[in-house]
Each structure stands twice: as structure tokens, then as C-alpha cells.
Image 1 (tube, helix red, strand yellow):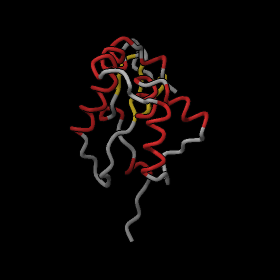
Image 2 (tube, helix red, strand yellow):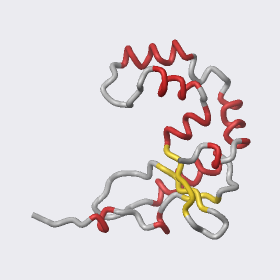
Image 3 (tube, helix red, strand yellow):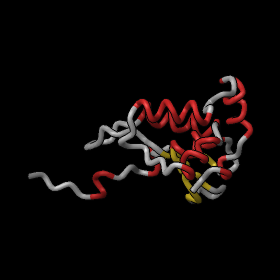
Length: 127
């Protein structure tokens, strides 16, 4: 059996999706997309799922997950997360469709959603 160390599974900071703390949510999404396209790290077929936020000195000051991006684009996701205990696994298609209908998610035209991403600072959504 091959022994795999944690260090073998971690992504080097140089390969991670990063943005400066003055970037927009749109900039963060683009950084994530580019990192996913380039990422070919050994022992892993998983793609990046978060963006690290760096201060002006390059120090990590936070991160933004894919769920944070969705919440930034569609604030009603917060209602689902808080109101119904959404956990992201084990829900039927029927239930998920009802969530979309009940909360009228992504009701705004796509160009409005994309514009919103370019106006929102990443620091508003980072953990």
C-alpha cells in the first residue's frame, strides 16, 4: 500500500486560485476558472473549489468558496442555507426544483447577475 502524506495532497500556493483583496467577485470567478484549467497536480483529479484572497503584501486574509460566489450572485441562497438547513447532499431533484421555484432563484436576467459580480468586492463574501 502506498503511503500518501498530507503534503502530497496539498496545492502549492503558487498553483492556487488567488485574488487581491481589492478584486471584484467577477475577478475571483475568472481566477478560479483559470486555476481549474491549469491544475494538474499529482494524486488528485479534484479541481479548485475556492479562491484565496490576498492582501497587498501577498498574505492570505480569507477565502471565497463556490457557495460564497453563488450567494454573491443570488442573495436568496442565504435564505435557503439559513431557513431550511441546506447541506448540498442527499436532496431529490424534486426538492431542489421546489427550492428554485419557492425562492425564485436567478430570477434576474443573466446580464444583471454578471454585472452584479463585477460591482461586488471579494472582501464582502470571504470567510
